[in-house]
Length: 344
Image (cartoon, rainbow, N blue to C red):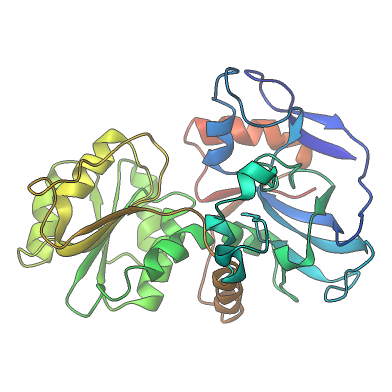
């Protein structure tokens, strides 16, 4: 089969031929119908050789959708031919976090060598992908896999962060989304659907601000110092009830810290390397600053149910599998609007 693979540290990804895997006990083989690309992939491919944590070569792609091609012994709840998406943050399956469906916070996975597809295990940017357990797939029925596959990360990650702050997002409050890319434009839609807060979207690119407007943001502003006063005015001097930073660079985390109001939430979701100093006088009283990672299995099920209601409109750019490396180049150059999806 053809697969987009990271061959060795420092190389660009390329398309190669690999053997189709066979499912063992408890495993499933999916014929891939769609696979999403993510900035996390670019981050992995920028890591130095010293201490690189994964075995290479590695097929990329941690957003996956497919039809069940075959199953190994012991699989009983998923049928051959069923259309599913993949829950990516795999855990040990038996600890307290995993028992709650919060495998994204499993404390044992890395030590046990349990890695997400495309982030340590062989990923979904291929014609077939092997899934370790039936608990890591969610049926999607007749939903379009190309439109649905970004929900497994680009949707699940903001959904998880937003749910933690819903008690803050009451009528009359203001919430801010920084960075309206693959995750941010879905975050805007989720905030409009799940909360009564006024949604303000910030970005440095006009095309991203236009995507924010199409996604339902009531206000769109350049991501710079001028946005501080605008958010202060919109919130009647209170500051934002919640700020979701999907960039995470030094400039955006500094902006986010100054925008959040007292008893507000500051969620750092992006992996741009920025930090927030937390101390008695560095952040507003009562505020919560936190880092989230992906989302829970139950939240992915909830997101698929929202998709069935037709309330989410994920903006995707489609690529064939041979164009996977080109899609990464476009993403790195900031040319992808929304989410890049490979359709084998």
